[in-house]
Length: 183
Image 1 (cartoon, rainbow, N blue to C red):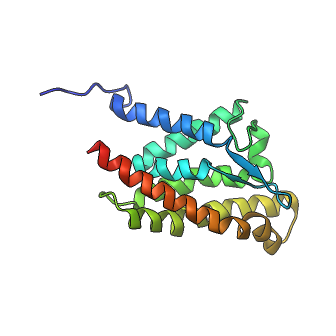
Image 2: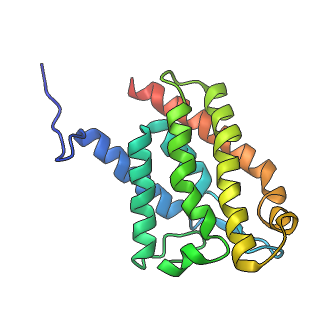
């Protein structure tokens, strides 16, 4: 019988490694971004990775991954969407998205279930992850840009819905495949 080594926080080395890979993927995927002319929000691969993180890790681990990613950005490493960084980014027009990530994806992880399921993963990320993320973005746009709720939805929600659903489906597919490989 072998015993897996554990890190100081009681997490296995395997779990810490998975978390580290997820942080790295968050940093890299934020660079895969497409600016849009009518909004400060961008289309980004980051949301695929955040969903995948939620599908691969437990809620607390997912929260830690996102907080580490946020702290790296606050510290000045250009890991936020579009290669941006800095504490002030949290108080900009898209700062609400960043803050909402730390709430949305641990919730997705919490409700993903114990058995890998493409449909459950997809539904949880679409019904829970997307709206919580959008609410954060809408709040920051309304407060920072002084726009109406409708204008914030036009800038931060409506154009992104189809792509975000597709990204949730991709993450669900990958999450199920990876979780089956780990069993």
